[in-house]
Length: 159
Image (tube, rainbow, N blue to C red; front, top):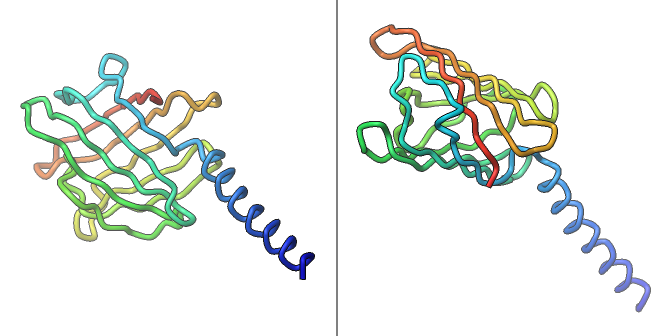
């Protein structure tokens, strides 16, 4: 009986430990602050501030964005992705106006996200986390509701 309890205890610790290691090994996970001076927004304007929180959620991640737009209005939206290329709903009001996002991982530090409004693709973001895990760069291209081209390069510093 003691051996069975010992085996169960070790098995539980192994599962809990591996979950923690998986979360720590995902370079996306953490709190990230937009570095406005290193970022570029074309045509602009840049937000005054933006914080991106990424949490492990099952086999994917959950994103939460909070900040202040250039005009002083709050920015608040979020979504979850599994990196399987399937569309996921966006809650809140994303500045691009997208209502769904999908993502595919190219490797552990890179992925590509596609933003849609209805069934129409309105933007693509190439996301890269630095090898040291301290900086994430998001290179986004797309079009606005009026058809204007947009190209932003957002640089986030890990907090």
